[in-house]
Length: 324
Image (tube, rainbow, N blue to C red; front, side):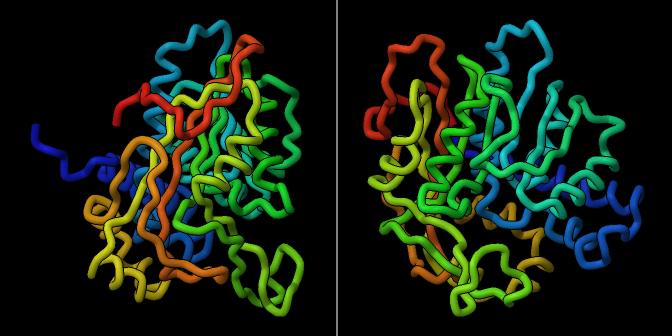
């Protein structure tokens, strides 16, 4: 069987992002400002690394919903993920989506974008400012909870562990939790340098905390170790194919990447690879974040136990139950 060129549905996601950008111009003009408005069209998916995350999270959610017996409308919680993905799901699935973020400007922007497509969407979207460590929802409220490339950014000594525990708390028994985190050959807690006025955290000589990059051991300790009474249904490692193309991409400035955003689906097809389980991937990064950093992503999917007797499954014990 011949392998597909676009393994991660890149044209589908890129097409939706482009549609979202065009609909925003037609409905809102340049309400978001010229730079952001044009950016939604020129670079509708902000990085080639996003496509596998979109693919595996959507696949897991759809497979779960197919087997769900509904007595009331499905409720899905998005914890801080890139808003284009949440808007895509809300446009495609008949469910009540709660799209959250710790930054109010990102929520306001997403709400404006939603206004351009909501009239033909299958689902509904509700927007709320939430801290992943202290979600303001009662326990067992959602059929699905997902968070794409978020918990690694949560500040605090155990910010990532606390966030995953909160997501599991608000998930119904039998519900699905899907999370993606960056992974590489060594564990680091990266900082980045920002202007003082742009910083949200504590000022340390121009550096602020940015993210954690996990190894197998630290993912076991900080993420899987924080989850209780759930079965790990899926673990997938997404890696990058190193070479000339990736080195050239790493040297591009943010502005150039934005102008060449139409190449992101092609770069995804050329540079992304994936396999089941946790696999150590080629990586290049330090404790200071750089746009040229190279690392992989780990996709984790749990099902919350209905019974109270099952123990947490480790990555090394996962038996694949969903196919790519």
